[in-house]
Amino acid sequence: MSDEFTPLPLTPAAEPGSVAGATQESPRAPKLETLLTAAATTFATRGYSGTSMRDIAHDSGISLSGIYYYTRGKSSLLYEIQSRTIDALLASTAQALSTVTKPLDQLLQFVENHVAYSNDHPAFVRVLSHETAPDGTDERRDAVELKRSEYVKVLRDILDRVRQQSSAPVPTAFACDMLFAMMSGPRQWGVSDTEFNVGMASRLIYDLFVRGFTGGTAAARP
Amino acid sequence: MSDEFTPLPLTPAAEPGSVAGATQESPRAPKLETLLTAAATTFATRGYSGTSMRDIAHDSGISLSGIYYYTRGKSSLLYEIQSRTIDALLASTAQALSTVTKPLDQLLQFVENHVAYSNDHPAFVRVLSHETAPDGTDERRDAVELKRSEYVKVLRDILDRVRQQSSAPVPTAFACDMLFAMMSGPRQWGVSDTEFNVGMASRLIYDLFVRGFTGGTAAARP
DNA sequence: ATACCTTTAGAACAAGCGTTCGATGGTACG
DNA sequence: CGTACCATCGAACGCTTGTTCTAAAGGTAT
Image (cartoon, rainbow over all chains, first blue to last red; front, side):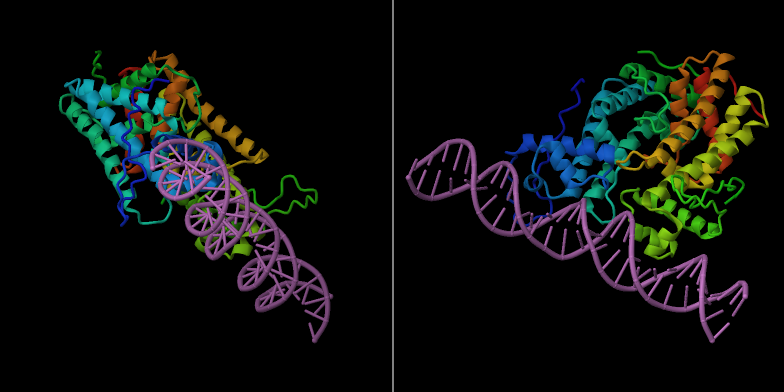
């Protein structure tokens, strides 16, 4: 619905390890976007291994061989999707966090941002968190993993600061895992398909978590 | 490590929709067990679509064609794994719940049971919650889904009872999702690989959740 | 109209897939 | 010793996979 988070940094075909490094800007960006969106949606529903290049061709409206004009191959599609998503997540989080200073306020900002982004780009976030390339030592895989741990560290640092001033009885790393688990929709066990307002959902998660984490100390209310 | 939950009900080759219904007991059970364990492990790590029958053959030590002596095919393997797992989960939960009566005590029992089982059979639980058969209207799929919703209902009923006597500010269905998300290891965002004692982990989850759910009301302590 | 460059798509490729078949060795019993 | 049955496996089948090749279509500038 809301597209406030969509300025994904563009890193198109531009071959990383290539020798003939003709770094053209990006004349074919818009169709690449279409391709990536279709691929992300299909990856999210059928899984990476369960998705064939012919599926993506069909879903994107681009011919099978045409795909290879825009991307290097199947795994490149996955990495491009994951890389763009974690980049966007890091960027929007940084911006959201810059508006507040108190630890509990920052925590609420983080949760709201993550939940909102997951709601706006469900397929991309699902591919980022659930899919991983099979067999293969790929440097791009490590790059994504590095940024992902950066993102996690942002949350853990916030939790450390929260803990510092409210003596939380739960270890930070463990609490960090629990919070990510709660935020990472769609729901695995499929209980509530209730379509919450995004703001309400993040508020509920925030309240539930903060009460449990800080031992009942009241939550902030900006 | 502990095998206290392993009495999985056996439902071996016994063809469900077959005509020649020679319902023999199960002369080839032990190797089937080996097969299912190997398949579950491989499914859990590489995903269902990412796993080939040759992978399973290699991991189980049974030849490729030999697999078809014990099972009907790839999807039957998946359904058998999922069916046994949810059956075992339902059974062990029922037994654990029968020992206590107070809602909060039952909640703790449920969490401890689920976490302990997930810790003892990580691959099976992961396959149950993460993997689903691609394309195909299969009646066995629906059977698993039905039992899964039964299992979810058990938890939601407990939460309803907890809510009834402590005026929880969070909707039950939503809270149910959150609790399942927290219990369903392994961790998606990969923060803490810390190997907790199982009892401690379930206790932490229980405390974190109950405080957040009931609004700070203290937890039971059996 | 000619030449050029971007973009598209049909056909084909070797490799891998799930599954089936026929044959093999091993016991148990007449 | 022969026969039936159980368990097992190598080889092969037809199909799908990711990827590449080759050629043609569309658009502009000369």
